Image (cartoon, rainbow, N blue to C red; front, side, top):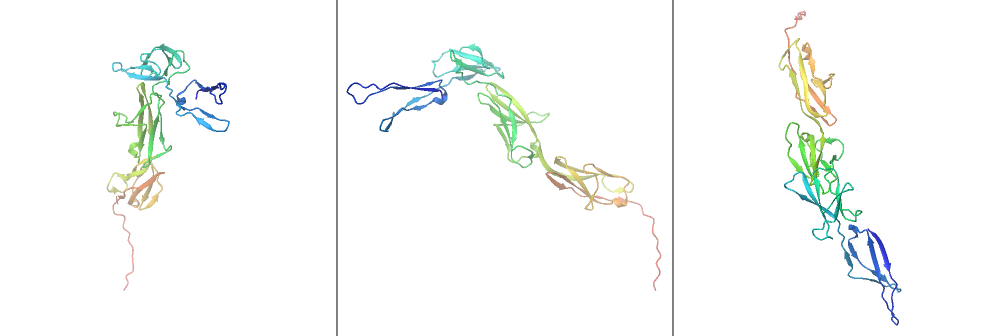
Length: 325
């Protein structure tokens, strides 16, 4: 509230009167918008009775405002108008300031779109009571809630905030390398009720008002457990003894999965991420193989692949048994 001063004069009573009148004045200096209110005077008698003036006095304080005028014939500039309800139409006794430095006098001021300075106006002789500054959006601050790792299936909201006057409007767009921008969504938040792995990627938030536009990117990486785990043998089919076969385990996972190999449901001491090659296959390698993909978000077993090793007849074994009569 502005600085308040109460001034009351001594009561004046004509001779022979038991009652008299006085005068009190409320002075508010450096008025602000918050001083708008209804004011009432209340006095208390020597006997403790209180009286209030009804109705009160309504005070409405208006502030200088800068209006933005769009110029259809000039796409790179707008016109600013200093406006006050306290002055008659056409009043031009205003001073314009750019980042606090006086730049121009008059009712109107030209503003280059996307300029980074802040502009305000004031009535001549009242530099300490300027209008609110107008300015293009600042580079947006972007993030997501809740913070931390984004897991598939969770609820996530991308948020975008930018200082601007007039208040900025926001647009979200997903950016795909080598492709035009995708579908745009209006609003300060972009929400995913059940986020999917396909939602990973870069998003662009654009903050825009009549004075300019600023954009900021944000990348999200959705984490998920293994999907579509399967084993591929190369070459497929039957393997001749002495030949070789490579088994590869593949899975869609983020982060990349580690693998555990099994033959006939028994774990094998193979490296967790590399394909495995059976060199010089022998009959003992015959069996059913599968793998299991695992990361911190889950695990998933693969299909089973049967490795059938073909080989020539082995040297026959001859034994003698007595004939029992």
